[in-house]
Amino acid sequence: MKTLLLLAGLAFAVTAHAQFRMPSFDINKMVDTVKNVGKAVKEIDEAEEVAIGKDVASRLLGAAPLVADARLQRYVNHVGRWLAVQTERPDLPWQFGVLDSPNVNAFAVPGGTIFITRGLLERMRNEAELAGVLGHEIVHVLRKHHLKAIQKGAQSSLAGDAMSMAIKDRAGPARDKLIAFGTEMYSRGLDKGDELEADRLGIVIAARAGYDAYGLPSVLQTLQAMSAQDSAIALMFKTHPAPGERLDALSEKMQPVLDTYSTQPQLADRFVRQIKK
Ligand SMILES: [Zn+2]
Image 1 (spheres, protein in one colour):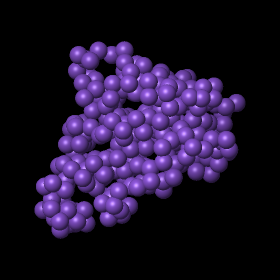
Image 2 (cartoon, rainbow, N blue to C red):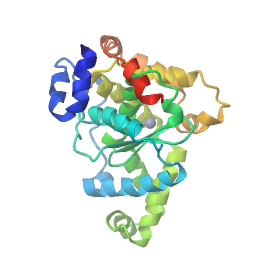
Image 3 (cartoon, rainbow, N blue to C red):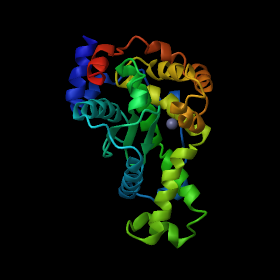
Image 4 (cartoon, rainbow, N blue to C red):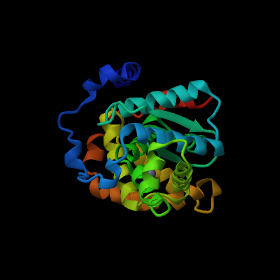
């Protein structure tokens, strides 16, 4: 029954999402409220945020193209958009893509573009795990983690007017520096606090969308079992806190939420049907 409800939800995500709202589930009580988004970021409006994300995404896609499987891309997009409509920024141009890479990774680009690698997808067992990972990435967009980091970092090489030109003028000379810096971010990683916040809120989003809240913790356990010497996961380990540390932080801050929402569907069958050919 729950599976059917969720299926209906995917087809009519925008109209149906109200029925999944859980009245007792107040996101603001569960997580640290971010009070100041930062003065500097306020200068970037949503259209500029989306445009910066597009430019960064096209550089990233140059390094690893999308998997040429329209059905798979559609499925991941459905799950991702269903999660995104649960959030406070449902109207961003959300897009979810599977990159054709054996590496284990996922990342978010400002403005609502989110990528997951084929390598990570193949190590998942059900849709709740996918939802947990996409939820984590969605939080990076909602909280503008990358946007803030890009802006802060680019300020050292783009002083004063050059910075605002880089943001406003997509064809200008300063733009290239901003986007190059933005692209590098994905090999350096975010602050640990941003990652742990994305874990906590990502779980809230997945649970609010109707999934077993243990999806993300379960993926973290899979990562924990992988060897740090495995080159497929080297970048993920370099750019994120260790999986064990993330799991500890979650069990400390997210109980009893995790257990309360642990009986919601995992949707293993549907996931396997869509992922495996
Ligand atoms: Zn992250």
